[in-house]
Length: 463
Image (cartoon, rainbow, N blue to C red; front, top):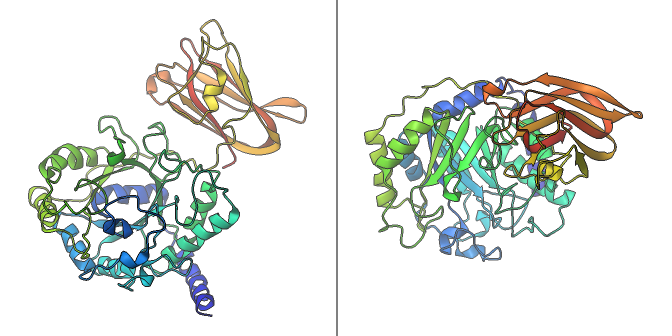
């Protein structure tokens, strides 16, 4: 009965969320970039096991932060000039930092027995700071991982958790997904449907930005599966401050790793002067908000050395808010790429750079057309009668595309659905072709190119 009543309360809150849709995506992206700096908090079972990736069967009883004070976290963030805190509400091992009815593996079933997320979000709202959640799609405790079957029940489980997070804790400005379409998660956007989760989040909180930690994989000219282009510096993902044009986020740990370790109180921390000079300032000028992680210890407090480091940032740097106008970015690509791994063909390729490199979901391999071919083409076979309305062409390095024509095979013949000219001097390497929905069994693209034609990926979507 308690779970049933909770469900009724959650549904009752839904109309309030839906009524709040009042900002364009570009406005939300600008507001995010204007934040400039936030603090990341990783805190949970890994804090008590000296490992960022804990045993997924670790007894929740080890979680006992006897001096927990989320206001200390908020004050630490404020001292550095942070405008928000991003908290990891569920990391890869599936332990939930909130009072959830979806699983017993949560903070309420620990010696602490308190809703850590409720305490933190209340403190943030009181301080006038924004709320951001970090949520792992990869969940080893609940067996949502690569090599195991992905069922609708697992997607429904994730949606039930997101419903709680987005209806019980007030305004959530951003949710950052992790473990999805990443080498460390290996869960594809079709295993757990990205468009289904994306639209579900927007239905609950339309002004909530959706981010996925995938910035290093995709070209820098378009937003793939994210409202904000995201880079995890701790995983070697590096944003280019010289030529980035997308609203972006970069995150990094102040300490050695994301979760607290026993050596942290005496460890040498990252050089905050370097972080300000070489990260925060140049990244902010390149449309990127920076998030620095400060991990609370087993008492539930941020160590004095980390507190002092954050305060030093506030002494040497001032967060003055808006400094750059974010360029209008293309609409995020949120549909599942229907071309990945499908049977394909092309005109004569150059050497070993064959046609299947254009739909292998790897932007570092390219189909290269033979320079002997004057009018190259590439084709992919879909399931019979597949509805599509968008094709995305990502050029490889050194390519010189000047135009393309998209055709769909339907009703026994080829039909031109879009034709575009391309200015090769524009340096734009991602070309988005949108057209009225058609039902096709095959898609073909003809290319005009005076020189080298190199295609990293061709995506076909029903977006």
